[in-house]
Length: 110
Image 1 (spheres, rainbow, N blue to C red):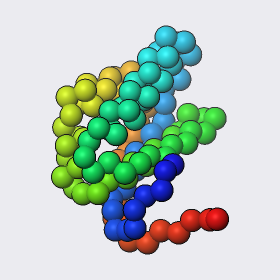
Image 2: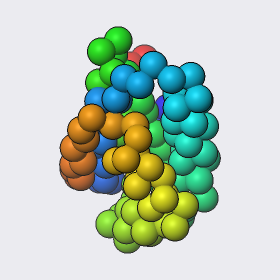
Image 3: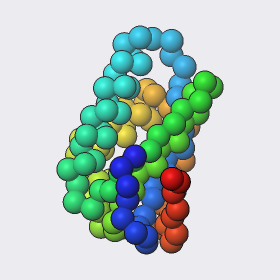
Image 4: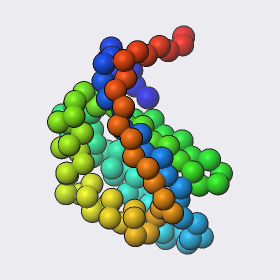
C-alpha cells in the first residue's frame, strides 16, 4: 500500500467469504472484476489506497482508505461498482460485511 496522509481519514472494511465454485471461469471473472474495481477506485477523488488479504478458506478482508464520506458515497454509487456488487452477491460471496471506520491514529515501521 502506498503511504496514506496523516489521519484522520476513513477506512471501508469489506470482510467476506468467497463461494467455492471450483469453476476456473468464475474465479477468472472474480479476479478480473476485483482488479478493475481497484483500478476504478483510483479515479474517484478522495481515494487514498487499498490493502487486501485472503485466507485459504476463502475469507478475505479488503480495506480501502478515503478522505471523506462524500468520496465513499461517490464510489458506492458508481454504476460499474454497483454492477459488480450485484454480481458479487449473486455469484462470488457466501456472505460479506461492510464497515466504515474513522482512522484517528496511524503508525508504520520502519
